Length: 171
Ligand code: GDP
Ligand code: MG
Image (cartoon, rainbow, N blue to C red; front, side, top):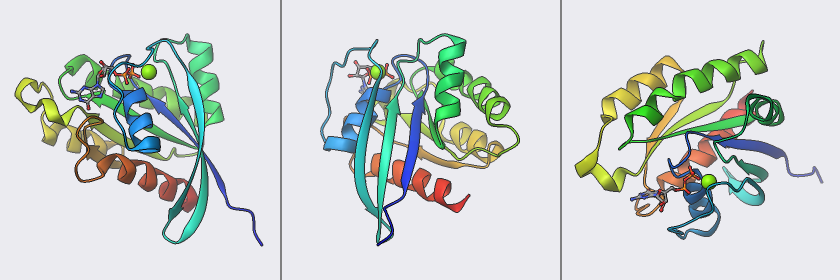
């Protein structure tokens, strides 16, 4: 029998956007309020996506690594979750440069991505409109999800990871 395919996914975004919370939500369906912000971890996770067993390796970056480390993470990954916080415009503005660096590092391949606007439960302090996220995703030709690691009602967090796996497998 064929070995189940392995997909390496890395999660990027400014410190504090909720990368760790999203990864933990995806893996455990739970929300952990405080998570060591300096920690970088890799997890293995198996899932059935479209009736196929997929093994994921997920790298939760700390978001404060130097450029060499960051490029190393980019070379390692097959697909990337770019996360911003809808209540932090600066985190949204960091997505474009991250994407440019990815394109540079992964050249000449075009890079499987999903864009995630996290903390959608904090709509009352929102700084980035849903349409702005949609527009950026359209520019980057990738899928877009607004979601909340702490109140993930529709399962958008898992959907974002699964869609990224599909995107990697399509390449
Ligand atoms: P990271 O630095 O990107 O890994 O961010 P963390 O996962 O450590 O989260 C940073 C902070 O944002 C923590 O205080 C989390 O509790 C909080 N947080 C993460 N996701 C959400 C979310 O969806 N909603 C809200 N309200 N807070 C969140
Ligand atoms: Mg973290």
